[in-house]
Amino acid sequence: MPQRNIDSAIMLRLERQGACNLDELIQAFPGYAWNQMFAAIDRLSRSGAVTLQPLPPRDYLVSIKPHGAKSGLRRRMTA
Image 1 (cartoon, rainbow, N blue to C red):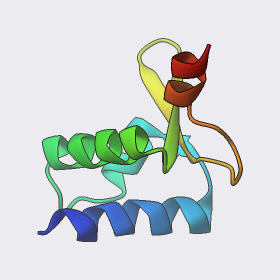
Image 2 (image 1 turned 135 degrees about the vertical axis):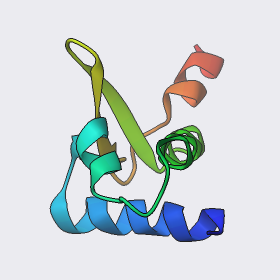
Image 3 (image 1 turned 180 degrees about the vertical axis):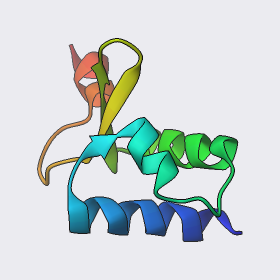
Image 4 (image 1 turned 120 degrees about the vertical axis):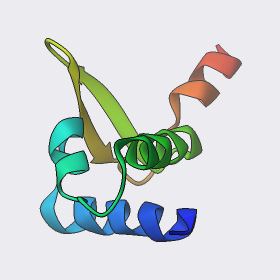
């Protein structure tokens, strides 16, 4: 499936159901391979659409980036 479809599906799921952990999000889309989901979440994170927060021991919380929030990359570049 095209990248836009998976990216849009992830964003829609997060908009409707809120933040969730990475494993939960991957399991919510059984039609996609793990590597496809990981690549999509990586793309969305790098573009600033979602944020990833570490959850012990080996997981991440995936959430939509709040409107008006600055990206960490911009903060690091201007610091």
